[in-house]
Length: 458
Image 1 (cartoon, rainbow, N blue to C red):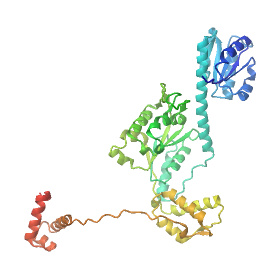
Image 2 (image 1 turned 30 degrees about the vertical axis):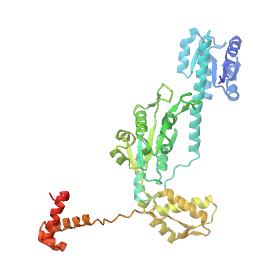
Image 3 (image 1 turned 135 degrees about the horizontal axis):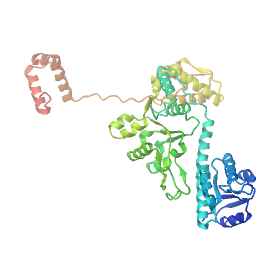
Image 4 (image 1 turned 90 degrees about the vertical axis):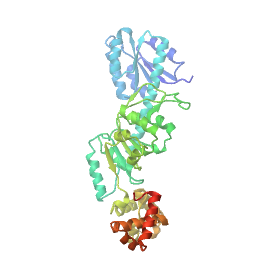
């Protein structure tokens, strides 16, 4: 079995240090011992222990345990995630319990039972590894955020100003938000804006694209798993809910969830807790949910494709992002914004967009919305050799529109004509026959035939 964990032991009794070193060395990676607690900061920096075994009483103050409490506090100041186990006499167990409340992980009584001590240290090593993984992921999230500028959403049109006004009203609330909009409208930017203007802006922001996660990996990604939960689970892993706890979880493309995935998500939201795969202990979570989809989720509820109770949980407030074609002058505003960005990026001396090119941009339908406009400007800047972007620099694809199939069914056309004639003449057969250009007898026979075929006039 592979040895795991680096252990630092601090005790004023050299016999205790010798015995613990002898006992632990065959079972862990490394052991360091010292009789001088003042060297703890040095060892924490150079040795980076997974677990610290700390004597509760040193010679300076042999009974109260205050020196142990003092060093526990200093250790936690250096590393809040440090795993500290107190070494204490049986008579000090009450103080050890107080120490656990102060931040210690566990305590080992003197004299100790060998198997119990080894099990306690092994559990402490695993706890440290778990804390380190969560801390690493949270730092990774924070690092990504620190390199991102505050999300800038360009828009001065009436629909966008109304959207900004609503977002401003939400800055002091923890309400779950559902963001609706077509592909390319900027749902992710709105999610980031909601996060940055919320009271949780200094807490984690975790983004997961549900459209890319197969159902078989849904639980492990969102809830995490314990070591050995399945074949490839070499070590435990925190889920996205756990990592985002205290902050914001952005569930993109939520309309792609299968019914089974919807049920599991609903359970986690309702209970405000998750259980890792292979685990038995529920983990409390505290997240603000931001969800987004380009699907008509209300139609999905009507057809039974999406759970109504889940929709109620995720859309305390709904935000609708307007498509670019409905944003008026924002097309020109965005075009100049992207022109400035890409001329700097590609070091091109392009000073503007011609009026004919702008007319072309304004008349285009933009099925890909802002994202498509951004790509169009980037491509134009790269390929252009002039000082001004012309209409020829924008190779916009024609929008395919389905032409409504004209009804040429003679039987249905005849029936529609008769209905219209009877309607216009208030049921007068003579007048209706004149409108249709046939005799009253012919009209009567046609009506009689229609009645027998489809009972239309009964």
